[in-house]
Length: 417
Image (cartoon, rainbow, N blue to C red; front, side, top):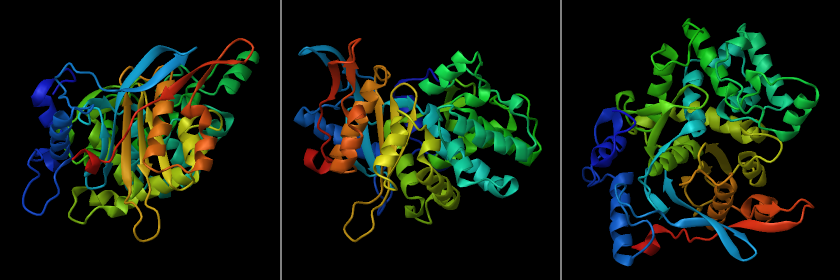
């Protein structure tokens, strides 16, 4: 199917089940939980009757609700619409606002799931990879010196030249202080400072393990990309043949899924061991647990040491939330299980800002507000994330003159029914 496919046919394909079989909108046989799509169809019917935001089909022209408004002097200068969904590992929808079936490109949010391919190929043992090195391959780093040193160590041990990287260097490094220092010293950023160089390093390691060509590893027909696609398909309970693909900014394929399926995948990342042995994703339990634990232990490798939402969220609630963003206003959050009887089950949250994020302010504000409403942030964490929760616009003297304010209600599904 081409990326331009649309309408009901595309929705049926994107909601396909293991091995490419469509998951029934009726929820399958007796005793089975309804699929994400079946559940969201039910919710939409309720929302439609109640006049709630989100009561629309993908082909409808009705826009999603406003999540964030940029306000200056009491005047709303811009509004940012979007959709949010929270599901558990079985795909049961817990909260939803907007369109849970809207198709989104994973972009960099794919990285933790694709890294499973390297773990399954025994790449950790073959290259003596540390949790720090594993985390940077699952992340989108800022191109700081600590990130460069970490990846250079991997290249030295593997015997692969970092010149083989094919991610480019456009926009690198993301870290403003590092970029200013390089400019001052007249140094041009190399590809290793690109935010996706960790992911690309993992692909090169897979090529080395399997004795595949290192050249042009980014092409969709390269064996490493076929393996990567098959791994993503397993994490999303579908088949590689049914994946909807396009090309990411760093040159490798990216994959489109309904927003609710992205949330379901992040629920799997939160607690891989929660899947049943009969679940086709059960084979991912051990490798994805290693990826998850590496990310939890090394939040600065998932993004950066300064002004990165993903790292800041993970440091504000250590061991409780994994955050991984993608481009164009997509964010995924894995809400880890809390010990003790009666505690909430692990879940995944996916959020998409329709216009791409409004200079990232909308995605940041909506993300923190979402985490607050679902109970993932305590008061101390909320204070630590205040600059993301209500991003402030400053005048030339550093005085606040405007802010982005999140304003929505992400009610539990039970309150909608």
